[in-house]
Image 1 (cartoon, rainbow, N blue to C red):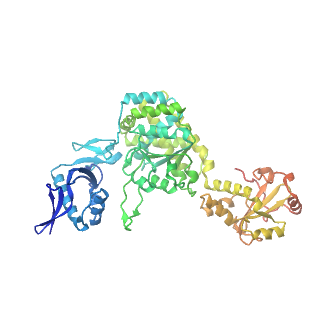
Image 2 (image 1 turned 30 degrees about the horizontal axis):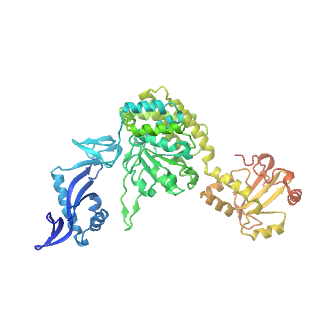
Image 3 (image 1 turned 45 degrees about the horizontal axis):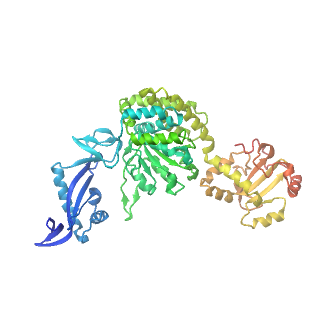
Length: 589
């Protein structure tokens, strides 16, 4: 059985068997071993130094767990770092050699500690900490995995002066200040409040200051620059790979800048995944189940130029998972935005840790009681409700509770938790009327009928009806009852297809909603809205419009607006339903 040996004179790794040696790769040695200071499984990062015959030294780092998984993973890991072995058959020998060197360093306590986690963390010795940047663990430094990321710069007094001068005098920046700290509570109270990771979307034109304000929120905790493991991330890769970087972040906010750059309009699956707080299990290219990278909790803010909800698949699932703050002008002027950017470039990372120190002194009982109080208060004040309100209120309660703690901990004269509370109530009241999937579907149907009424035949004109039904653009027919009422019969499939184009896929739910509306004709003892039409012999839905109650039908706004055929039809018809049901309201928004 052969073994690997180092030949320092030739800068080569040799394979020795039965007294014969073979050159298999450049000289390699372990220079440093870092072990994770948190997590159930010991994870080692091994720094390796390659020496070439011409004296060039190169250092690279491997994750030993990934490297040690299989013979194939040995070659794959080393090749990915630019280190080449002459033959695949030597892979296991490299694995054994590096394992032996690693074990020696562990046994002699020649290891350093590192951590990837940010926020609330259980260390390997069972202690609980709130990690930010470097810390001391078992008498040794534990270094954050990204050596280039800086968590603290400048002085806390300079940052406090900046807050009082540029942030606290204005409501919009005070709101962002509160949201930037709310991640601590969202993570800590996740189980008690039954709260998923809170996901927010700051959407609006580039001049609204959303990028500046999200960078400010990051500056509460550390550097506002983009980093793969820091606070501000970007859509420079797939959503799956981006989500994997969230693992281990619990209580420190994550900011994702410019969702527009991703080029994917529908982010529904991404929102589900982020809110769930856990990486999905997926198959590897080798059709093996890939291990989950871990979980996260707290608050994730995404900036974008357009609304994420508008482009999401409209199944309703994204609505309670995403709080969308749209078209808020976050900064007072271009100069105000510039001043904020200049300040957070010079000083950052002071306020968040101080807030955590205050918060962790509170007892669990007091935290729970305060959360309940905030949730109950919002629940009583919110006047407009739907099926999502309860779930959204618990998230808003986290933001409101954060505002109350800012009041309690710092007593800023310019800050008022009542002002934040009133805004959150107004926020929810304004969202309810427009976020219902059914209401959105109805608005789409209305617009579709207006824009496509020229594709409808007159029921009183059999010849036209016959001609149009053979046309692929045909969508239905219309029938006038005197000068005040018109019935529009539209093919069910046409409406279903149009809603699908607008990302609304829950056709059965839309039908149930329409069946409850007085302006939709119902059929049979089950009062169904979509039934086989006697003239078209396919399923169709009939809507009834009444002129004095609905002005949206611009092509039927008065008797003077009727053409000759329409006037003739109106004279022949009577306004009756099969069930003689009176119309109480017609298309009230």
